[in-house]
Image (cartoon, rainbow, N blue to C red):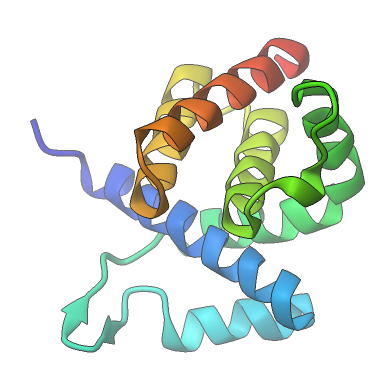
Length: 149
């Protein structure tokens, strides 16, 4: 069964949000400029001969803005769910953005069922990491979901 166009567009938005959050973290790009850059050059674009699925722009915008706006709350939630002696600073920078954006979606997007959100973020993790890290994302976001929903 193939995913619906809306589901594909949201998946693309999640992947792009991780990239945007990573870029913002590394370069300090102001949020408005960052979002505009993604609107103009990345979402649904063709890069190096690969045509990317059109992302749901409003969903992308909400993920990026919301994750950044609520970063302290999200980081506190994540820190409380990491193993003893682990800190957010020890996590891979891409992994951290996946966990942050996934947590934001669980906190703020009640329109997305918990299981669907976690599954989607596990898929995003698989785009960057192997199964071990994807399972880590699943475990952390499941713990976040239990505390916020």
